[in-house]
Image (cartoon, rainbow, N blue to C red; front, side, top):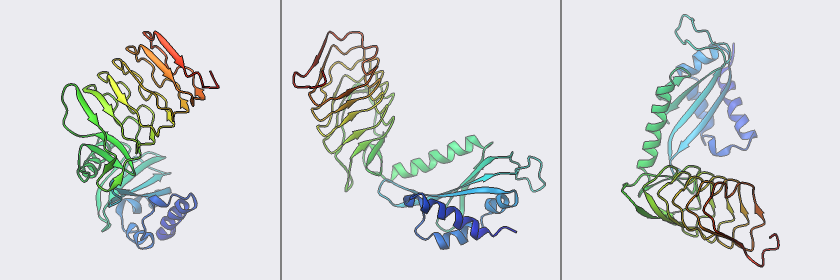
Length: 282
């Protein structure tokens, strides 16, 4: 007979061992006792669950929303009598409230329900964040404000009392209504594909604190006409500006030491490509 509490504590202990402390409930001992009563965990154990993971889901300000509980079924049986009905090596997950009640649960074949549940949780998180941007752990994750033709956006340096330090992958991708964006100096990194395929984007003001222009950040921005690369930038990654067919002139500052292959791939209208005279890598 498997001890449910030992299994849950072992999973939590593995999280601690991996230094994943941000995902561990602070009350994990009492929480493991709650988990023992969850029906899907009891069924999972009965069918040979080999892994359990608990994530604490928080909003952008670090406030608790719910737990996500994940189990892997090692010996599922599509025809079992209690109707659990999963194939071997199938993941089953639940969103769980702080009171131990299951908000929703799903397994592999419930893909639509899984997507719906994630969207509902994300909406709840977004609704807690004031202003036009989704925000979590210091980074802007998306735009949720009004949309119109040829919009000029000025990103905030603070959301609530929290400083904005980065932009997440794909945060603004495919938003073709944006004409220009101004990014504050509080932002120190912009992740890959953040503005990918923003076909209406013509101008962008990059922060003076930026060290790297990452992969495909502006890929497919076909109307981007001018770009001023800050002196702080040391690396321009592959495909950073690929497909920016409206670019005419590019200036590489003195501190850029790594210009990766394909950074300006398919920028067919560039007429002038200049490297700063003090750049020792030119």
